[in-house]
Length: 117
Image (cartoon, helix red, strand yellow):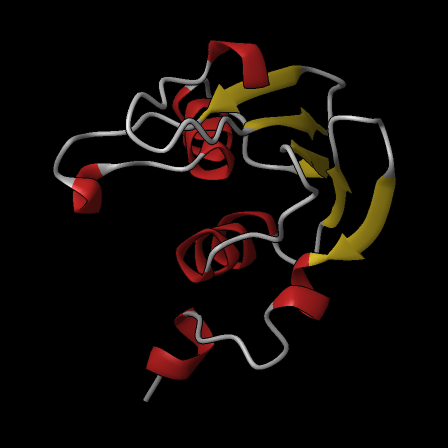
């Protein structure tokens, strides 16, 4: 997935793959825009593609980058809301892995339970 990234401005490619409960693997890559605020991260591409394909339950997420970078805040929030406390594996280009989870990355999440009266 990382090799499919469109990162002409930063040259920082990221790939993500999410495994659904039925065993499907949905991939995503970062897609940059010259207007940086419109750039979308690989993690959100993978999760939203899985949602668009009808998946609602997920087993795990893997994110591959040059240096095993952690997820941005927007990705942490979206993953928490759509995937709950899913295991997340961060992988660098040498194959070194770090295992974490959505809950560890976003310890006090804002979600729909906060909206209830």
